[in-house]
Length: 44
Image 1 (tube, helix red, strand yellow):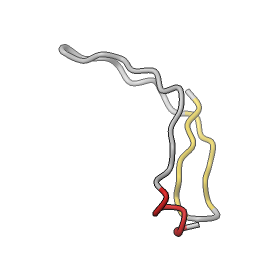
Image 2 (tube, rainbow, N blue to C red):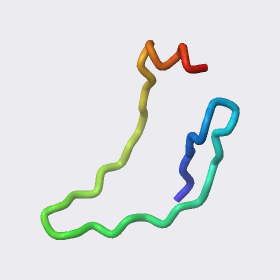
Image 3 (cartoon, rainbow, N blue to C red):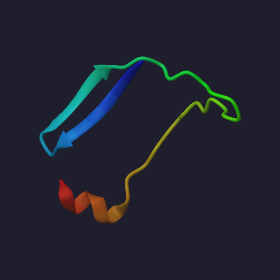
Image 4 (cartoon, one colour):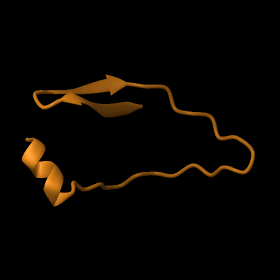
């Protein structure tokens, strides 16, 4: 599964990671979108 991994400001990498196995009492969740907090913009 492709994931974007943040290491530091100029270093965000698209990497391949295995899909985690779902355990007892857990549910898989599909992320469709995410956002960034306005205060985090100052980091960039």
